Image 1 (cartoon, rainbow, N blue to C red):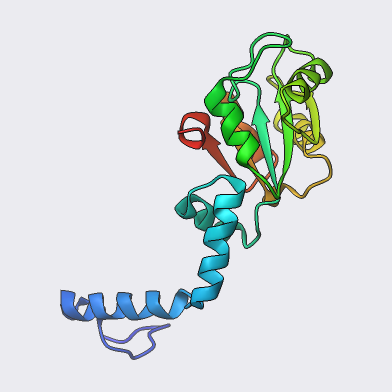
Image 2 (cartoon, rainbow, N blue to C red):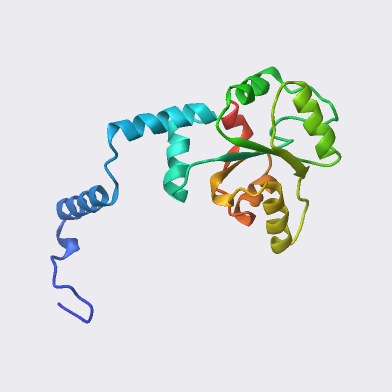
Length: 186
């Protein structure tokens, strides 16, 4: 029975075969067919910034932008004291990373400047550091997270964190995504 708004197309309740065909066709029409060279460039870029291709492609497809910066929490780096040495596996992963900015959110009682100096003494370059936001109202949290980004648009920054509170920074700052530290440093 045709009603208001009916497009007079075939009924999708006619069987699973027709529904499956329609779904596959719509999905194929939606997804772009990337040239092989573009895929190779993106795989190379994912490796350069220290991500697996699946994670990189997911962020890229979600935001429509490349990742140009990472925001690390001191918890994700397992830094809990001033001038603490970074674990060897984490230091190696950060040393291999190139082509992106790195920002640090230092959890209290860490001093951002002293923590940044300690990382620099280990040969690790960070582009900036600030005090990690505490428990704030959403608008205040948004401003605090934006202040940590060093002028980079939020949808181009991937947050690497270690707690549920840090995951909330992603929504507040409209960041490109959140990656748990254990997955990033695996």
